[in-house]
Image (cartoon, rainbow, N blue to C red; front, top):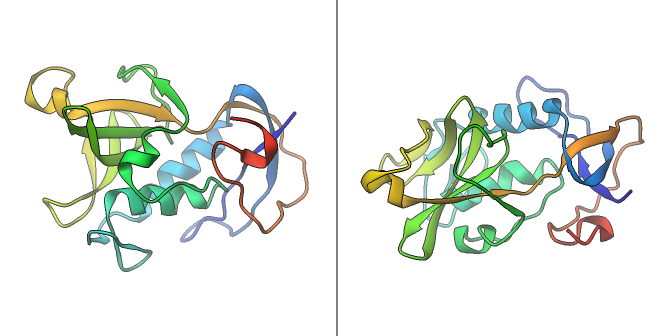
Length: 184
């Protein structure tokens, strides 16, 4: 099995530990990993919005927030929303199929200009340029003006953890798409 994910180094109320996980290709990370992504995302609520920013405790833009949160799980992402929207596996825009940690993509026409992190229960966290802060918001409806804005969902993490008893991960972080040679 290929090494694909690492449990989080998480700030705030979490313990700062990282553990490597062997995950079957096509499988889902444990609920603990996905819950950690949701919790770390929520911890950023209230951070200021600033275009091009990726500074924890300072400011984020939408893709900077996603890049920052996912980096705690050893998933390195490109800088822009459009580049992030090309990665992972496409998931239908159906709230029943979404898992915490899925990346939601938004835009006009075919252009992706915004991303957020699904945290469960029909809600997601994103850096809002309109509100000038990181916020938690309900999923938009699938129809109407807001429904057309929601373009898709990308799953960057595979699905079932095979073994969580591995030693701590190495310092270098893999890049999504070549996660430690997995070929994802």
